Length: 187
Image 1 (cartoon, one colour):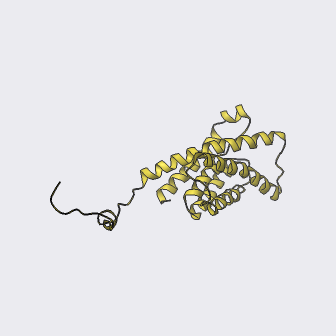
Image 2 (cartoon, one colour):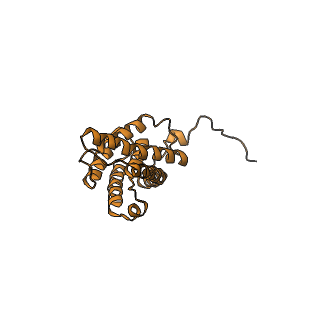
Image 3 (cartoon, one colour):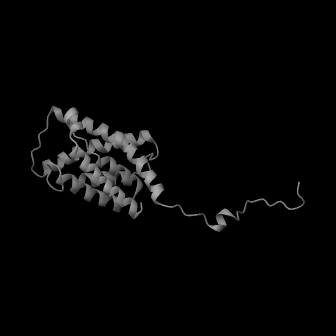
C-alpha cells in the first residue's frame, strides 16, 4: 500500500467514525449502533503491511474513542489485534471473493465489541450488558459484513486509479526466448 493509499484509508477512517456518530437515524430505527472500523481494518490487514495496520488501529481507535463513551484508547488494542490476526493469516483468506469478504467482515465486526467489552472490564468499567446487547452485536456483525465487500471494491478501484503500473522491461516484452521467427519469402 502506497502512502497516498494509506492517507485515503485514514481519511476513510475519519469519515466512518463521523458517519456512525453524526447520523443517528439508523441507530434510532434499529436500536443498534454499527461500527465500520473493523471492516476497514479487514481491508487494510489483507492489503497492506503491519505498519499500516498499526497506524489505522491507532488513528481509528483514538477517533472512535473520542466520539464515544469509551475511555480513550480502549478501542486501539482490539483493532490492532484484529489487524495482526488477519495479517498473519492473509495467505489463507480468499481476499478476492465477495462471500469470503462478507464472512471476514462479519467475524471481525462481531469480535471487535467482544474484545472492547473485555478491555472495559479489565479497566474496571461496568458497561451495561443485557438481552439488547445480543441484538446490537448481531446488527454490528451483519452491517460490518455487508460493508466489507464494498470497502474492498472501493479501495481496490482507488488503488488502481491512484497508482500506475510499471511497464514491463524490454527483455520481458520484446525478446522472449520462445518466440518463433519466420524467415523466407512471404506466403
